[in-house]
Amino acid sequence: MKLNFYNLRFSEYNKKLFNIILFLFLSTSVFVDAQKAQRIAYIDMEYILENVPEYMEAQNTLDAKVTKWRSKLDELSRYIEKIKTDLANERAILTNDLILDKEDEITLKQEELRRLESLYFGPNGDMFLLRKQLVKPIQDQVFNSIEGIVKKQKYDFVFDKSSDLVMLYSNKKYDISEFILNEIVRERKIKVNEEKRQQKSALSKEKSEKQNKVLRDREALRKKKEEERKARQKKSEEIRKKRIADIEEKKRILREKKEAIKKKNNLEQDNN
Image (cartoon, rainbow, N blue to C red; front, side, top):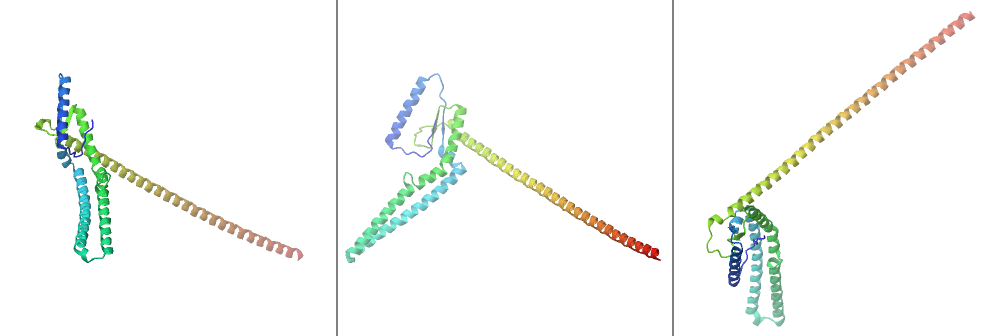
């Protein structure tokens, strides 16, 4: 099943032809499957989209762009009309060269106007691309919600009340527009909750990374202090050993001096 959400505009002939075909199709379906009750519902697409905030924001953005583009085209069109009027009023007093220059300018401006019209509103123009970019994702979202409810409720036919399909009578109990809106709201809440969960997870991860960084910094600082302590201890030990060595050396020198004096005294005694 695929539904068309764009505002289709049929000619009167096509409307009549479409209604005849639809009537024959429904009649045939009921006749062929008379024992099975056909489940039929309808929606009001305009009502649904008007109650989807994202759609209204996208439509307002698109309308603002269209207004800006039309203003630019209108301004250029007025300028062209002014040149034409000036040329008509001044043609009698202008030289042929000046007349040709103004006619060339008019031609160039008209070509520019047609180019801009095609650029803005052509089949693949800016309006088409912007509508596709802004509106189509929301329409797809609405379609997915409709499709989910249609499959869940097992509807055989779903019509759009706001399209050019002529509905001579519609019973409100077959209107499932509110169900569609509720489904869209539910999906939006799920999406928002998922985004919050991901954001919370990201913040938790960021917090965890910060905590790990703090722990790593603390451990690095502890190791640095431990290394500095060991370096100071080693230096103190070296100073202590050097001091002991100096003392032992002084003691050795003193002993040698004493022994030398003692030997000298003994030699003097022997000589006497």
